[in-house]
Figure 1 (tube, rainbow, N blue to C red):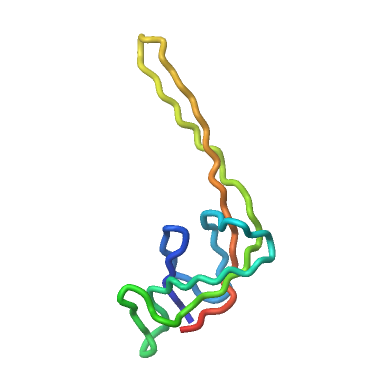
Figure 2: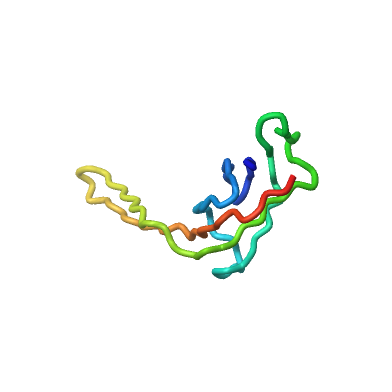
Length: 104
């Protein structure tokens, strides 16, 4: 079964067994179960259901495989001939999840 979910401010088209990298779920550790209730659509073919905007009673259960940090993004500002330059870095906190079950 396929579904379109919204989690952590992003939308994903998922099916059971998929592995996703999303923004970190707060207060979770590796092995925890996460329940996603914002299911926008689910099913395939004749069984396809579309929510307005969400499907009532539908949920997707996922397992947190690991929490990690993304690659470093460098932000560099400079003004030529003024001697001004500023450099900052950012690493996004991420969770790797595996979709266990989809129920609609």
